[in-house]
Length: 89
Image (cartoon, rainbow, N blue to C red):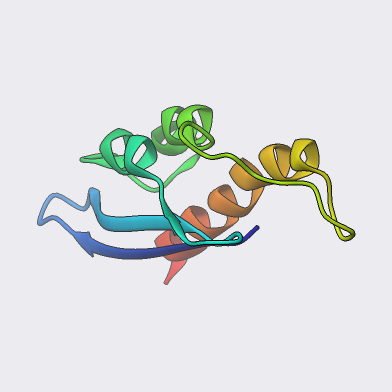
């Protein structure tokens, strides 16, 4: 499962995510994470709430490559890397 984002920056330096989504059998918008990211800075403290709600509304499946459990566990890891990496760009 991979995460992708299209994001903008406010004048204050806070990040505003226009879209966050996760790839799976079908792409899925992470709307809870989008709302949690609104107005937050891209640092560990700023994205903590985003990571906590990242898997809400997702329904990963088991397949030969990975279990649904693993996909739910790895989602916040990929999202954290994405958001913290975006803050460095």
